[in-house]
Every structure is written in C-alpha cells, then in structure tokens.
View 1: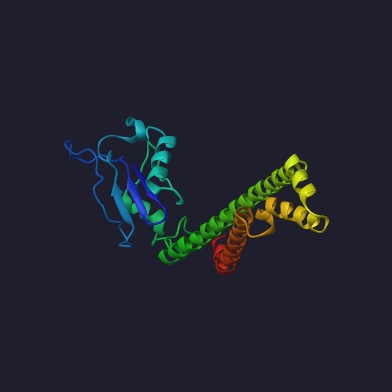
View 2: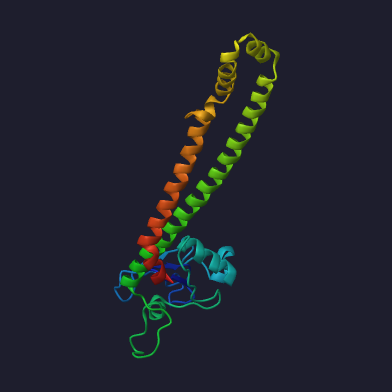
Length: 237
C-alpha cells in the first residue's frame, strides 16, 4: 500500500503485492521516483511489515488519511492513492502524480509542475504575510481602544481628585490668606498643579501617544503588505 503526497514527496506505507519468495512477501524497496523528477520517496517505518488492514495505524481509510496528513504537514495538500485492501506500485503512482506518458493528450489527474509549485509556495507566503500584518493591525487597534479607556478613566480620577482639592479646607484657607490681586492666580496655580499630567507631556499622555503611533505604524505596514503582495494573492487563488 502506498500513500503519495502531491507537492514533491511520496510516503510508502506498506505493500499489497506478494513476491514469489516466501521469505520476502512484500516488495516495497525503491526510494526513487520512476521518472527522475526529483520527487522524494520515503519508506514508512511500517513498510514491508504487514498488510495495511492488519496494522492499527493503517487499518482503514481514515487511519491511512491521518498518516498521510501527518506526513505532509500543515499547509500542504495530502493526496491518498489506494485503500487498505488495494494498493499501487511506485510506477503506477507516478502515472497519477506526473501523468501517464502512454495517454498523451488525455487530461491528467495531477500534473507535477515544479515551477508552479515554487510559485504557489511564494504566493501562499504572500497571503500569510498579509494575514500577519492584518492581525498585527487588529491587535494594535485593540491596544489603542484599551489605552483610550484607561486614559479617560485616569482623567476622570484626576478631575475627581481636583474637585476634592478645591473643596478642601486647605485650599479654602490658602485662598483666604491671599491678597485680592493674587487670589485668582493662586487658584489657577492649584488647578495646574493637579492637572499637570494632562496640561503637559505627562506619562499618561505620552503612553497614549505611543499607542496611537504604534497603531498608525501597523496600519502603514498592512497597507504596504497589500500593495506589494496582493497581486501574488490573486495568482494564488
């Protein structure tokens, strides 16, 4: 039984053919594709040990497909040829993966195109690049929203604190002790002292500006990713 993988790799799981030699009942042994197209062939750890249907990891189609998917890895398209009870040799698989040279002019199930495969990888990377930049932009937007809420809450706390200061006996005494011509200036000085963090480049204001700058930078990065990669994404689909 064989499990081929479109995209340049073939995994041989087991064998479904008898040889004439009872000491060697299975025939899987070649590690090269029959066309010389640089498609890698890997022998599974259970190849040549038993029929697929007699092994827990390949006993049914779902098990075979799971093994095929695990071999391919994320981001690749697994393509299963054969079932536990019926398999194909490597030459027959190559006819499926690379086309049958005896059926010229007929449509191929799968065409092995190294150039297209390379471009497909590049196009897929372009899509992932845009997705990454989009995720960063969304995260920056969430951070900005949180920073705005935090800044607003801080202003409210400062205003409440200012009200308490203005209404305090200490402020009242200080204002009453000032001469008439200085009383307004004294009051303004008290207000400024308690709102200094917002009337100048205080820590809270600087933090909010930093988050806004990061949000703008993330937006610019996303726009650049779209401008430089969108054509490849179109080609990918």
